[in-house]
Image (cartoon, rainbow, N blue to C red; front, side):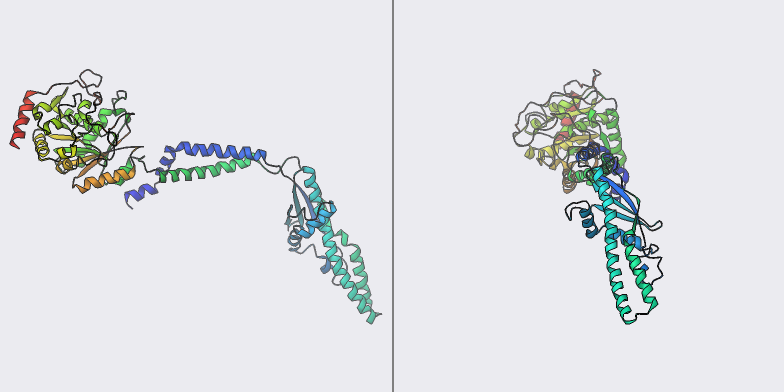
Length: 523
């Protein structure tokens, strides 16, 4: 069984899903039983009363042949079942209606009869809107079944009597026939005693239905299943990412770390955030131990997923480990990496690409890291970012940056919105994907992984972010204006000479600029 199938069959995954959407389940568990209880209290009440009767075999003690068969024997194990079935017929119901002076047909289906073959007792249960009426109906059915059985037996006795008398006309002195005729007449007189009422029905003290409490309990059980099914259905319809583990299934790359929401600008200082990026740095080294990484491009499917935050903090994490890192802002449409690291967004990469500034002027160190962390900001947003990033000059700059550092970390525009970063993807050692939980759609993550694979770039891993505060993100799409003022400088988690995480703005160092200029000219 593969990992995806194992996760789908893991009951713990479903319980995590229930917990994530617990408000839906709780709403079902509260609303359904409460509504059922309230509706039940407003339904018409039904009262039930029961009468217990026993069949009598009138004439069964006569020696004349045929009498016991005509009336039915109480010892017959099927007699009770047949009598119970007889009580529920329309004929008995109509007879009970006549006894109560009710319209014929008004009592059909109002009773249930059950037979106890061990005792021979038959219980007649009747339902009505009042306690008194339910008792009257049950007793009326007990009397009606006696009348009905007596009428059925009387017709059989009368038929037998006629037969015996015809025989006596031919055999006047036959003593046996005279005894049989006498027995039939005796049996006919006892036909009305074919049913004995063991316990007459009395008006009940409480309604049999509805039972609001019991109905609410059944609704509670049903609500549990309905709520669980609704949660599963909504999860099927919701295409957003909720579980970080889904990223591995969608991309085929390892999930390296889950960055908490406190890592983003505007959040309170969290001492755990630097540890998260240290874990990301170590995970990149662990999962790519057989590959040399001299350039890393950070990508995301859409805007506002925390890509710039990851690039800035990851560069700081490598710098703290003693690596010489250059953070390159290749998002020329909305440059934010420079301000995030505490330097102005201009002059930057766009100014170098169009020849307005030299590379040594645009590249600046980030305090307190000095030469271990330098940043090449995006610069003034140009009108043709895709052409500039795909140019030969951009390739030369990228090679120069790799030669002058241990690692180049590149921040890029969203892959599924613009194609600016495609040229850089082909030149990088690998890509690090970023996706935001509760926002990014699963199909967008899969398409992003497909784009990276299409340009033959190795996806080193994927980072799940916890989201960013309102206003964080890009200005792409309709209404995007070039030359917009970038956001105010933000923080790099856990860094800053003033102790509050704010990195001070610094000017570029001459030594690093001259060294990089020589490398760039040689390319």
